Image (cartoon, rainbow, N blue to C red):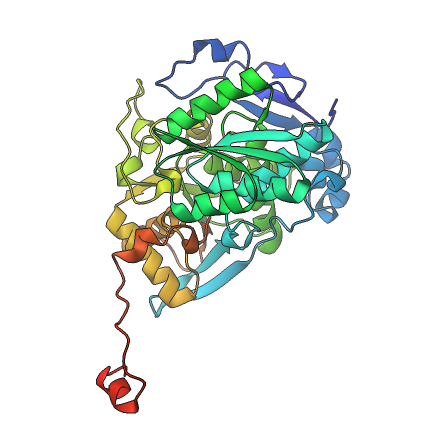
Length: 409
């Protein structure tokens, strides 16, 4: 039994002791249907009053007491998290008056933000003697789980829609995981993975199903608190699909708030692709309506945002903001990022930067405000997405005259 935390239903408020078999609130999950976001998502709650008494130790231990794992020895030996936070003073070569920071999570072991979650889920499974973990994925979560499990000596089973990018599928296979292509959408792969969990007893990593996924993703907020030397950002731009990353970002700052270390939550901006905006489009609706997703940003292409209710609660409670961007704006943002910062981000990550650019162009930032953009995955994950926006020159003869004809300068 892990006594570090309890699990609280975000719907009815009932608390439960954590076990590997508990994913959703048994009571609220009875209301769930295949065409709406699940209710009964659980949130990890810690003894914040006790932690306040040893707050200096908690800070010096990188907030380890706020993690659902008994010992750091259960975590992968790979370096997960502690990714770079870059400060830039220009956008497209033009000076800016605000403080722009880019959090580059492509520097994680499998080149995506998802390693934060996979590491925590893998460690929890290890502490409970579980050796097989399953997940549904459009690519990044799958390659992440595959890589982390490879480092931990665990078996990974990855269910992916057949449309998942080749680079991500290649990663999964190279890490030695079992890949299960599903003839259908991510949502169908998600449902099949849950059925398999019940049928075979595998541990499930699915976001917004396994409550520990939020705990892995919240680590980015704890890092930002440290890296910014306790300065709380004015804005944080987050790419959104299922709503789990943004919930994790909120959860990290909420934990800091509960510990009395901060007194305000940043304005967190949910950024979605116009072609897959089922979370944003339903924030103000009383009934949930699905629009089939179609976007170049495959990692955030979701019909049913599985963590909708938690994300909506956080956005409403802490006055978050939301914005959509077109695929054209996403590719433009990816190219601006690469050419002016040297960071090559996949479309889902560039979505957050595109949202920031929209705010910037509408003069939403004041002088010296601190603005953070989460860049959640490497552009090498999906080269096909940007192939139509670039031109690779034809080969030339190896001569100076031919080089001159290219008129490089």
